[in-house]
Image 1: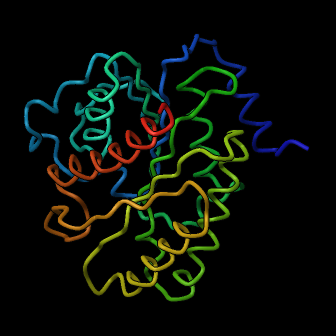
Image 2 (image 1 turned 90 degrees about the vertical axis):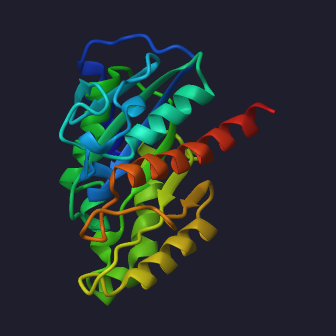
Length: 249
């Protein structure tokens, strides 16, 4: 029996004008909370990252956009430039959806964030059953506020991954997640959530944990600065590139 959420997703994608997607198109979902949304200032980016590579399409909030055109940027910058360079003959389509301050249960399949993410994927790709190359996930800070929520993180994240893969008809799609690293008394259960991230990485197939050591932050010691966003985006991309090249050998 089809998941009702998959059925809704297919209806949405079929309802919009269909554009062809060639075998060389690589589609990525970028999702999470504020470090995925990005609070780094675009003005602090090096000039080389202020242009969108010719083989990259970026969709945010359901609309096509040029990279680095708003006031703030996220890790899509480093990711896009890295995959563009690694696979210059392919087209790279990034679909981003983020919700600041969100905790993992707000991403469950009956919740608005999950449904909005799937709608935006349909609006952006406009193709029935698009093949997604990877899920890029930066979330978990919102689950560090209390021990009960943190202790359930592995179970809840595993459920989210399983459901998303089912609805995308992609049971083995790489799920590449970043280690959370906020600093301060407002995040008392950081270590516990990090532990739960490692548990997911060890127990759920095709999940990959990207370290945040050395990533520069803005004044609040929570959110990545422009340099940090570029570096973290590249780290996500390098894992995907490694996996993709391994498959072609």
